[in-house]
Length: 298
Image (cartoon, rainbow, N blue to C red):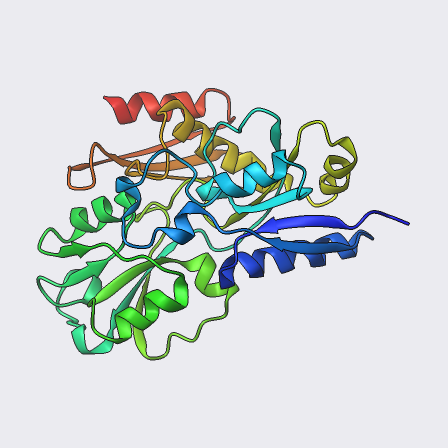
């Protein structure tokens, strides 16, 4: 009898989508699995924005600890939430396909102003707790007020509907995976080359104990090499800058049909500081992340 793989996940709708997707992928290669739901600091502390919370890995730490205690066999994470250095004894063993990596701006229909850049009224209140999104929104529209917003995707949309915000920023990947109906809102779908997403946005990462060779071998079947090629560059930029989820940094990489790599990056010192943009292309990935970091630091 094959062992049942225990998948550690958060309990939000999106985390459960990710866990069920993992189960389907495992079933396709012949393995049964079960879900173990774990509450994280990021789920429990809803009143603080990320920059006020201690350390890195708000949505991953408790799941990683359960993995180290052997209460689960694999952790499924949204890759953008993972710190770039793994805890001792754990490894990212595989990553998924990439859903749309972009951010979307979801606007209340009552607050739309077609004459303005990004189509919302002057001095609007925009909801986001991400330093990266705050900095880039202020870059495009310095007139706005920014208000922190927490909670899962449906909760945030409810707060928007209630009028607590005029518009909110969300990852396209979450909205797409949850198949959320946005007909009641006006949606601005950003180009990831212009409004730069978080490194590895839209990608799932499967984390396993380094010594657990059996589980690591199973997940090799699920690994998406093409996604890894570009997200490795994005995450390396983050790592070289020693950044966590709180750093106002966006990095997006694409590989074209000829095998050339193109990177777009945006970084600010703080969420309310000016944003520096960088775009670099080269025929190989060698030293590309280092070049991007050098340009950002100039």
